[in-house]
Image (cartoon, rainbow, N blue to C red; front, side):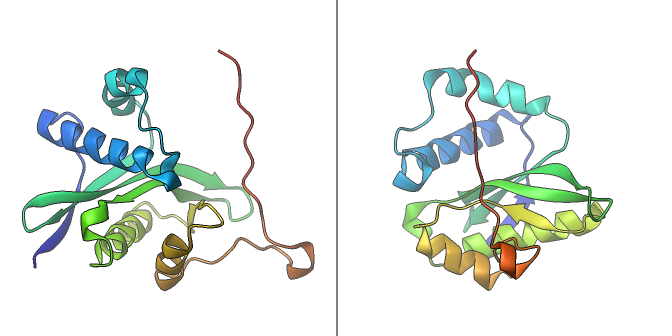
Length: 162
């Protein structure tokens, strides 16, 4: 078994197509919403992502086949006064889960964050995604807590009308 993680180049049409297919694979999974990517996203996402500053992505290759991806975005920690890297998407194709692909992708993100001088990696996960939680814990992630008496942070969202 040969597993490698390489930086993503969305200007390479073959890589862009693979990336979009893997992202749609994730979006079709119940942990990704279950509906797949919208037609709009399929038509516009690659071109839009090429222009997003602070995007860092990679593809995982197992025996020459793309089987996973990680999408990260640069952010900033005001408390540390240093950059951070947020893992926005991590996808491992369902056919190869449990074979170390997720850990390899997270290790790539950590190495990239260190190259960028980041103080931390962040990510969000659905509370009932126990398999992902175990993987994240194995990679050293823990709930975000400033003061244990105040509890852990929650991730919230508000949709804005177009």
